[in-house]
Length: 597
Image (cartoon, rainbow, N blue to C red; front, side, top):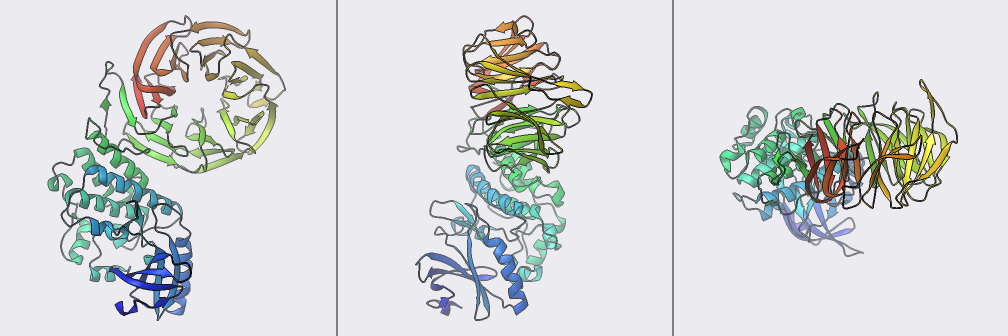
C-alpha cells in the first residue's frame, strides 16, 4: 500500500512510510490545516458497518486516555474500506529499532524503561483498558527519549489481527500471557508481557524460541529458562522478581503492574552496596522475597526497610504489628506485609496531596482513613484497597484523628474541628478553633479529650462525655499555653493514661496532665526541633525524633535510655509497633528504618 504516500486520509496527508508491523502499515502524516505531524496506522483489514460502529465506541474510550507515557490517539476513520488510526507522533522511533538483537541493557536503564511503561499501563488498567499487544516495537521514544506506549487501539478494532490464529500466522506471539492465549486477558497479562521484555533486555534474548505454535505451547506449559542461566551478572533478587511476574497463574504475579515495577527497582538497588542505580524511583520498594539491608553504621540493630529519593513523611503500624503504611509520593499511600517485604496496596484515589493517613482503632483495624488537600477523608480497606466511605469537607483538611471506638473522626478544616459520623457521612458537631495555625490533633485513648496544638505553642482541649456507645457533645473547651512559644509539631496521647506528650520546635518535650494543666516530666535531650513522637504500648516510654536522631526515654522521669543515630536528615515520622518490639522511623533521607526495642 505504499502507493498511498501523498494521498489524503481524512484530515491528514501521508508524507512518508515509517514501517510495518504485524497488523498495520505506519506512515508519517500531517494535518492539512494545522500542519502537525502525526503517525497514521492503516490496518490490514476491512470492516462491516456493524463492526465500524463497534470500533468507534472502543476507540472513543482509548482516545480519552491522558498519560505522559501513552501516545495519544487523535483520530479514527475508514477510507477505501481500510480502518486507520491517527496518533501522536514519536520522533525517536521504537525500542525495537534502538536495541539490536542480542543486546543486553544495563539494569538501571531497564528499570527506567519499566517505570515509565508500568506507570502508563497502571493508569490504563485503572480506566478499565488493557494493552494486549505490549512489545518493544510498540514502545516508542519521544524527542526527550521518554517512552510513549502505542497500539492501545489495535485490539479494539474487529478483525484487526488480534486473534490468536492471526497472531500465530504473523509470528507475534512472543509476548502473549497464557491466559491471553486462552482468550481470557486481564491486567496481569500486560505484566507478563512486560516481564518478557525485561527478560529480553537483561539477557539479550526471549525465553521461548521456535515456531509460533511451539512458542504458544511453551507459554502455556513450560517455565522460562533461568534468567541467570542466560545472564550470570543478574542478581538472584532481580531474577526472582522477573520470575514472579512470569508466573503461569496470573494470581501468582504481582498485585498490579506498578508493584512489579517498584519491586524490580528495589531489587536493582539491593544488588549494589554503592547504589549503582543512579536514579531511584520515588516508588521503590523491597521485593516479595525477604531482603534485609543492615545499616552499615555504628548501630547494627537498625534495619533499612525502604529507600527512595523523596522524603518519607508518614509511617504507621497496624494493630497486629504485621503491616505498615507509609507515604512518600504526595498522592500515594503504601501498605506492606512487613514479614514478607511485599506491598499489599498502593492506594492512589486521592487527587491532591495526602495530609495524613492512619489505621483504624480496634473494631476498624483493617481499615485506613486518609485525608487530602481537596477536603476529602477517604476510609478504605487495607486488604483490598476498596473505598468504603467518603467524608467531604468544604475546605482543605489540615489534620484528623480517629475516635478510640472507630465510629467517629475529628478533622481540622478551616476554623473548625468537625466530628464526623463515618457511617452516616455527616458532621455531628462542629467546634470553633481558638488557635492560630493548628499543627496537630489527637483523640485520647478513653475518648474523653480531643486536643489541638498550634504554631505559637498553644493548646485547645475539648472535653467529651462518653457513656457506653454514646457520645455527648458540648461546647466545653479550654485554651492552654505551655512553657514554650515555639510551634508544636508532634503531639500524642498516652495509650494507658490521660496524659499527653508534646514536642516543640525549640527541642523541648513535656508530659502534660490536661486535668491540672501541669507538666509531669520534661525531656531536653534534643538539640533540634521535635518532628515526631510515639509512646510504647505500655505507656512507660516515649520515642522522640528531630534531626538524624531517635531518642527513647522514660516518661515518668524524663531520662534518656537509648539514642539511635542513623538517618542522614530530619526524622519526619515515628511509630511504635503495638506488640512493643520495634519502632519504625522515616526521614527526609528517603528511608524507613526499623529499631528493635
